Each structure stands twice: as C-alpha cells, then as structure tokens.
Length: 151
Image 1 (tube, rainbow, N blue to C red):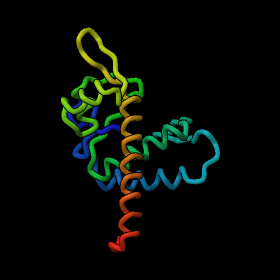
Image 2 (cartoon, rainbow, N blue to C red):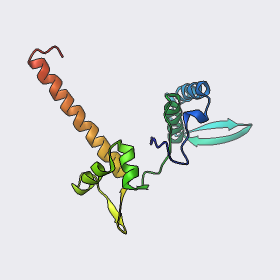
Image 3 (cartoon, rainbow, N blue to C red):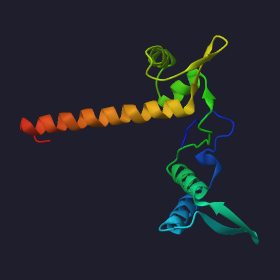
C-alpha cells in the first residue's frame, strides 16, 4: 500500500464516507476469511463478476487504510520514481535518499541526468531497514533485561 497524498490518483479519506468504508472493510474481511478458492463471485447492480481473492484482499487493505484516515494510491511495483517521490515515500529528505543511492543501499538507474528508483527496490530497502531496526530494538531490550533495568 502506497500513501502519496499529492498524487492525482490518490483517494483521500475526505472522498469517502468514513462509516461506510469502515463497515465495508469489516464485511470484506469476513467474506475473505477462510476462503480456499482463488476468486469470489460478486454481484454489482445485478451483474455477476468473478474477482480474484488477491485483488479483494488489496481492496480490503485500501478500505482499512481509508478508515484509519490515510490517503491511498495504488501503484504498480515496477513504477519508476523520482528521487523526490522516493524520499517522500520513505519520509526522508531528498539529499538523504541520494546518499543512500550513492552508497548502494538502494539500487537506482539514471534517465538522462536524473536518478530513478524502482518502487520494488524502495520497498525492499524499507523492509530490510525495518528488520534491522527491530533486531536492534530486541538486542537493546535483552541487554536492558540482563542489566535489570526493568524492560
């Protein structure tokens, strides 16, 4: 799920009814729980349509984010982002992102004189970074327990 409040294709919580979004996400979560088939037949205004469960799970996740007050944008994983867009998604400054690119922390390529980052590479960096932070936190908590600091 990509949050990008300034994208023209972004759905904002202001665009939807909060109660309806919340209830729809709950109903969809219930429908999806325990399903073994790869799709679900839905009826929209009397017309039947078979929708893959993966797509319905994404819809549920989008509804949950909207119910939490987050704007949501759906982007293909192979999307190429500018350094500013990539920095915005990581919530870091553009100069900091450029340092990460130059250090080889995140793969990138150039188009003319401009750097581009694939969304999938950015998400992989974010996943690795989260794992490293969690590991460091667990090590600090273990050390605090060994020292009897009450954590």
